[in-house]
Image 1 (cartoon, helix red, strand yellow):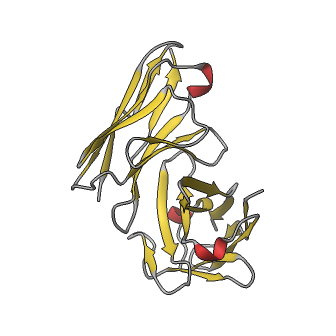
Image 2: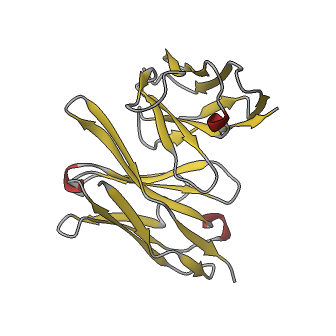
Amino acid sequence: IQLTQSPSSLSASVGDRVTITCRASQVISNSLAWYQQKPGKAPKLLIYGASTLQSGVPTRFSGSGSGTDFTLTISILQPEDFATYYCLQLNSYPLSFGGGTKVEIK
Amino acid sequence: QEQLVESGGGVVQPGRSLRLSCAASGFTSSVYAMHWVRQAPGKGLEWVAVISFDGRNKYYGDSVKGRFTISRDNSKNTLYLQMSRLTDEDTAVYYCATWGIVSTDRFDYWGQGTLVTVSS
């Protein structure tokens, strides 16, 4: 299953609303997770089941979608949110990640 | 606390083999599937392989199938990745990871990664 993330990068300001999309090459129900990764660190789970917020993750992060089209939204971008974001499909093996979206400071 | 610690990375020549290890502590790793994920320098994440809790079922990414073997020793709480016929495209940080549900809570544990450099 191929996952296509867009955009591959974006520039935004603190306080902006940011939306990242992930499209699967076939239906994956809601078997999608979103991760945040900062340089030199392991990925951190933000969202699982397409829309369930992982414990401890700020509520400004939200996920939506089902089937083939998914969205990660950061409602009010904070300085600590500048990072790279990846979607991961867990519907079937082999698992696959999207190509990533780097969120940079404008 | 829950911890995954990878080891075994280093510089290896093309065509040679290397074995990575991942030691789990602070939780009962023996009841969960375990994964390897890698990241080439400056690139995105790539899922590599998974092994079921009992070691019976294994799946691999297309780029490593037939060259890499995932295994585990639950008596030692350790996960392994045997890598053979290495090429420069295998150069990456290798993470072990595990995730699942306990009661109603989702857990998601990752190691700090170990760097494998394939170079002559």
